Amino acid sequence: MGLKRMILAIESSCDETALALFDPQRGLVGEWVHSQVVLHERHGGVVPDLATREHLRNLAPLLERARQTSDWSGISRVAVTYGPGLAACLAIGVAGAKALALALHVPVQGVNHLRGHVWSPFIPLHAAAPAQFEQRLHALLPHLGLIVSGGNTLLFTLDASRRITVLATTRDDAAGEALDKGAKLLGLGYPGGPLIEKLATGGRADAFDFPRGIGQRSELDFSFSGLKTSLRYLLEKMTIAEVQARLPDLCASYQQAVIDALVRKTVLGLERGSHPVRSVGLSGGVANNRLLRTRLEQGVQRQQIAFLPARPQHTGDNAGMIAFAAWAEAMGPDPLEEGMGLRIEPSLELTGRAH
Ligand code: KG4
Image 1 (cartoon, protein in one colour):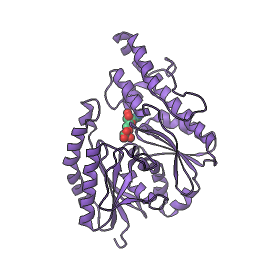
Image 2 (spheres, helix red, strand yellow):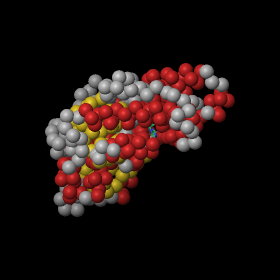
Image 3 (tube, rainbow, N blue to C red):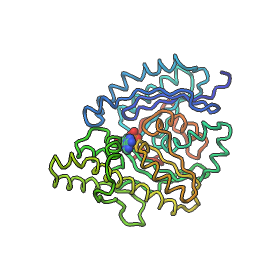
Image 4 (tube, rainbow, N blue to C red):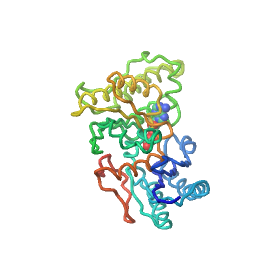
């Protein structure tokens, strides 16, 4: 392998045990995932104790599988998600990463999971031409990013010196949470976002008028709790048979309300930036939603700005984005969290603070 330069990443913050191997000169050369979605589906949401046991059970066999199917001689660093996430789940990943780093005689680096989402839209840019990444990245900064997951809804900017500034968060529920809670009210399973998306394809988005959670036009912050409450009130007035018959319309209208709020606020964020934004990114689990991708792309391209959605395999929890962020952040302005004293930070925020 010659020069040591590869990063092995571990992600275990919630319900996926994931590994990735990143080579700055070739891109992601391997990704391995053990998903727990089926296990948690039965319980209608992630059960922390079950998730912890599953990580404990699966991390070592996954590492063994990765070792047998890839060349580890070029690994120069082990990166691991140290927050935000479920404490015991994070602890398994961090403990595993430290043990691995000791065995491989390389340093360990903590990566903020949210910064994985920040960088995930840039993975295809690197994959297309690794040697030209820096130059091409520079042409896309300042960047405005929308992170939409089950736990977060965030608008941020990434400036030319790779500094991150949070522009807006949600005042209550995250976009994914609004979809998951809406699905629960509708008697659908978990996770709700993909189930609502599937049913919505057969429904009319203008059948029901749900609040957009937009608040005052000038405000950037999101709010989705009113949307969920309005669905609950509506369902209380309908019979079970009516709900069943109108399920596609209910899903399409509810999904549309979430997407409208996300797109409108992002476009507002574009108008707000002190520097003209050159690209817009979309990441997090909800970024899988095809209608959201299409609508945001339309809103962004109308302003002749590049649209960078994360690849579907890098939208939810994954180690590919952790490995990539570990590499990209090493060239950024913030000090890296590294060393054998690395701790978990279950409440870590995007800009590094634990709350
Ligand atoms: O990023 P993620 O995997 O988990 C964390 O929150 O960390 O995001 C999960 C969220 C869930 O709320 C799920 O319902 C939503 O992403 N989601 C979707 C879609 N796929 C996943 N929401 C809308 N449309 C989808 N296709």
